Amino acid sequence: MSFKVDYYSLGARIRSEREKHHITQEKLGEMCALSTAHIGHIERGTRTPSIDALCAISSALNVSLDSLLLDSFDDNDLPVHLLSSLKGKDPEKVRRFLTMVTAMAEKIDEM
Image (cartoon, rainbow, N blue to C red; front, side):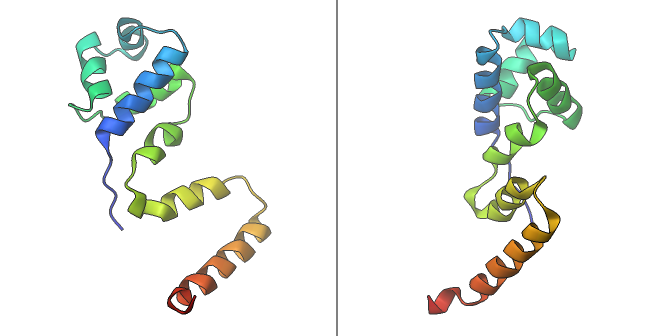
């Protein structure tokens, strides 16, 4: 399974979170040891942020890394979204749920 990150959406999500916290690009850059220009490029989706940069940004904005990333995946990556939704749930209930979904997926053409 391969994932393609929509960097434009990722950048928009970062910008939105930054603005919610009333932080300027300059301040976010200082908090993350990144230049203001680099933050701007990330927010516009014109540069691919490193994992270190994403971790620093998520920490500075006090948001989870997956909340920044997951919504930026293509809709074909449904399993990623589904598994993320199941984090922290009762393991036995998750196992039963996944068993049911798998059984339904196998019969989808008959529905």
